[in-house]
Image (cartoon, rainbow, N blue to C red; front, side, top):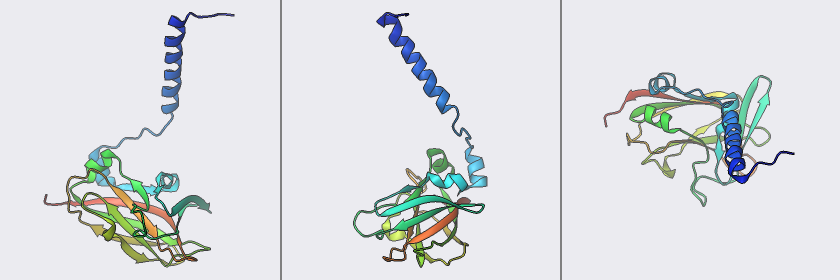
Length: 193
């Protein structure tokens, strides 16, 4: 059996562990888009990328498939102003996405429906960037068929230190869930900053 002295073992073990970590990371998604591409193509969450959602207190999100459609089922047990403030179930914009989109008017498109067996009558959306708070949730009604909800926003700030696309279903005890099949964010014209 071969035994290495400590002075050789620890540096060698560190190199091997580092190589294993680098090798594992090299299998991830490494598609980087330039700011111009992000502005031209926008952001889209659909299929497996819907799994990038984060949920705040009082919400759950589950990735499901029905036929050829992958969707998120988002449920709420409380409202956005009941207790702890939260961005709801939200997608976080990366620093590259923020720098590409800040200073622009933006358009959101949500493909959404009521979710059985607890179909919410409506859903609220918000785009949390600086100077946008809990009082900016926009409520929209939904039906049992997928439909698109489209709206434009003109953020007051042109310097976005953060950005979250927030979703919050209505939260009646027996009717509190929606299905989200697609979320897109598109840059429109630049704002005067």
